[in-house]
Length: 439
Image (cartoon, rainbow, N blue to C red; front, side, top):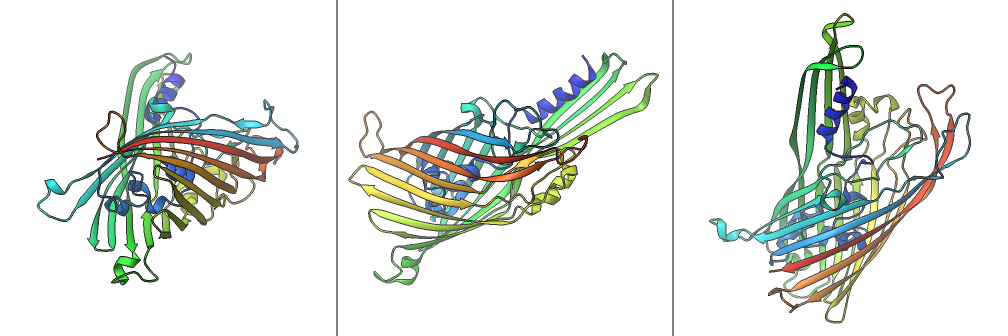
């Protein structure tokens, strides 16, 4: 086997995935379950479903019932790079730069753990896991430079795994904590080769370890806390959440000796790169709820500026000197009950791009401000056929419009820079469906 093939095999085994990964995750880019997708995450801080393990684990304690949920998510992208001319533009097949969908299968469960503890205070545990390509791709990963340009936050989504617990601290105050789990992979190759690339005495080691990052949440029922009976604060709820930064990272080292040309200790190549990076996120929300409807407003601060220093240690992207802004995202979500069985959900969000500047040497990242709108419907069946427990079906749709933005394309080996100017724009359509059994 040729040495070069061994190096790329090591990289592929460490990543265990395929092309078109991204900086982000399914929860922040689209939403986990249909109610999150349909509300543009405007209701997510106050949802009691298993997606609360990511958005606000304290909400696990708000619904005393257990839950088993299965869901599918399909994100259809049409992301464009429209050439505005330059000294040496690359040849593209049309203006659509990326249209590879993301397709997630998710499963989640919530249950009451009180019976296995020595305490009477209810404790609720939940987990949710998602796998790309409808369950066949555990960890999508790609990190590269690009002459044609590449989108910063879209593509196949890596393994999504969250688990956590929530409990009632005092009447009106719930708290919760969960863990966001990602993988850090390492691959090492040692080989001896001749000038034709034929190897011998090969050794290949691959390992992966979990990286666990915290999520902390709290919820406050203001009416319960401050009112003995109905008052102006009745129906109002507040939430505060912190999500720690996380990433998927891979390190590959390869060492080769070519007798007579490169003696011991040989030629060593080391690649360290990260993907699917999520910043520290601080979120606060306020919800007003009545019997048949609720509306919520949330603000998220995402600290993307930390990513610039992280990428300085990335051997693929470090020369781009990428810089990022911290951003604040407003979200509004609403839910209405129509009749006995139907719930309609909608929401809107305005998401500013964290990427600074118009160019990133060799890497050529694109990112855009986004308008996100959603709409969904839920169907509740108290006595469904076959099942002994209530069943809820949810369907959500989300549209993301990427506002046009110009970028200058640059490369270390280009005769002159920028070699092209492009206008990046596009849209994304997201479809999600789930089935939930309450027990």
